[in-house]
Length: 461
Ligand code: GLU
Image 1 (cartoon, protein in one colour):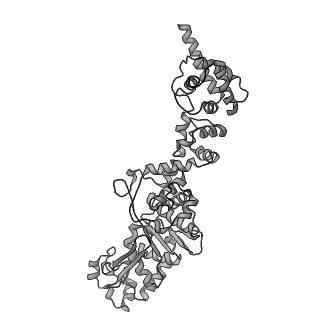
Image 2: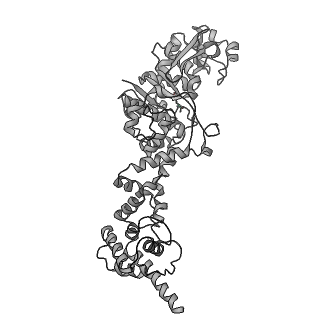
Image 3: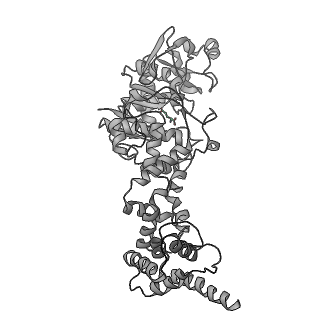
């Protein structure tokens, strides 16, 4: 069974880059009926942001990415690095006892090759060093083997080779006892039985260090898969100025989460079917590591909106009404569920986000000052509509036919003055829907005003 992990640092909301990594891990895990682990990499305590872990969980669940193991859930935890000190110290002791690591008394924070060349710590008598280490501040450093080619068979990039001579001995435990990123990740991946490490290409340069640690610990390395970068259209590192937002913002802006899931998956992968609009089920059925390319992806907010629109188009009316409801500006639009459903049904191919509902609703209501409409249609409409028993869409459809009969007018000559009287606009949703969504009171008031101003104007002439 494959076991994957998503390992965010709780430093903020999920952005496009790391959400895409979570999406790929989740899709591949679900495809192979594996286990998806959420691990919180919070050792860098200065950078932790309070509430960020909760935000990340919320973002993941909004995207529909559920995890099988994570903080408080699963047998290979704890799943927060800040709670795993005992494991790091146990593995560190083993590496030291087996000669793979040594206490280093040099200044911390310097892993350069120059330091290695002038440092004598690596050569300290292994018997004497522990005694000295007991009293003096020190780090624990990994002893990088000399003259070795470290080959990584990356599932995306193919074979990548590193020369161990280019890698300086690196710190495993800081002088305050906290593990470094490279060490903690390997201990965690071992204890959490991770089989596939799927992450951004930015971590490729860390991989030889991690591979050396797996080798020194005698544990089979996981499959590594390094996914290319996402760039802005100017080929620079993706940022807000390219229109990229965090998942929390996309959620509050009303994007369809399946549109985002679809978009994020296509940032590095393409469907063998050549289709762009893919449901969650199709993505799970089709995803594979060997269709992830090595070329950097280009972020395209227009395509994201387009995919969100496509997924909204595929929703049932009931689901769409429920999804737009929280976005309706209640201060401007007082609509019950039936009225909202009628408005949404009449406009349903016009949504890129759920928040578009307000712009769509505007077209159902009057804009500007009511003005005189010189047409026999107005009086006929007033007479017929004021006689309707029950203000529902069926009755309104019949009423529109009756208005045509009574006024002797049909087609545009009927609809245009009516629409102008009701909304002040030339174009908009079907009139039956407009009448229903406005409701009896507002519709009759608008028509009354339009016909009154006709007679007032007539008197003056
Ligand atoms: N915590 C790391 C990050 O946020 C991920 C580490 C990994 O995937 O190995 O980029």
